[in-house]
Image 1: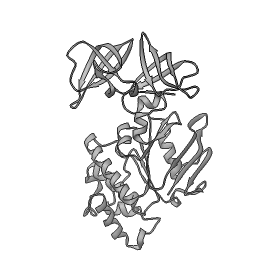
Image 2: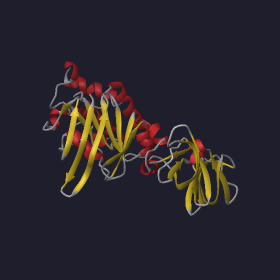
Image 3: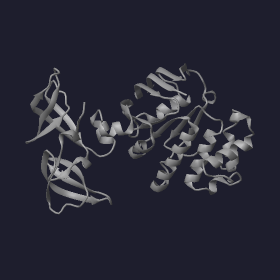
Image 4: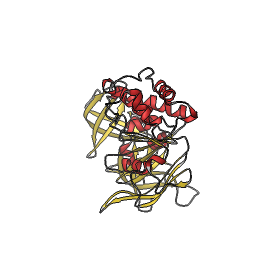
Length: 350
């Protein structure tokens, strides 16, 4: 089922939780909302679930406006951060509770549907277990099975992994992604974990202060962030502010083959860049784009400290009164380091 938010805003008195949000989630897509606390992720999910109504704008399911449609009639499955399992019910009864408003898809019995879904989430034979005796990961699987029981058109996941330890969270998110692909159910996932969003999503929307900063494929967002916020939020990044000091003119008016940008007392060459009207340029370079004593654009800084991370060493340099982070294969052997990057490794921000 295709899901659309068209110019949606949500206000609580003088407080604005969402401002003019327009998003489209394609049928069968795994779409993730990511951003810091208070950016509007959960509010968006509640609007889709029908727990709240937009102050302005329209929410559409399959092209139809769902204004006034109550949550139980929206064909939506929801998994909350807190699992919300009923302690007085068995695992099987918890999953079957998801069928209270709908018959099992395909016309089977409730018991058959419960068994099918528990097998799907790797808990076959757990029907008679007490949910309080299960691990956090197992409880989350039960909650997922319950949400999937009626065969919803839309699955909403509200930070379902946040209470789990890192290793279990990584394994369970892979399982959720595989289940979603097998079922082909349209899914909207909410998380504040950038790595999680990048790892499992078809597309990602980055939210900040109730607005959409950028929507795109994970690789696109990582390599081509549009704004300073996206550049800094999705993985580590080095952001530089400079002024154009030279440009190579191309045939197209207003464009250049490359720019020389002065940051502090150093000039850096950038490629594939439009000439900004005010001459100011903000660009970012990922830590992994730097190499020691290599690259056309070079800088020399003092090593503040380094962190050994197994496959790489993250080195923090003090340069031109700002911190520059570089990712190297080996720890630095000196207290002062020269590193460089190529023009194609820099990305200009709006």
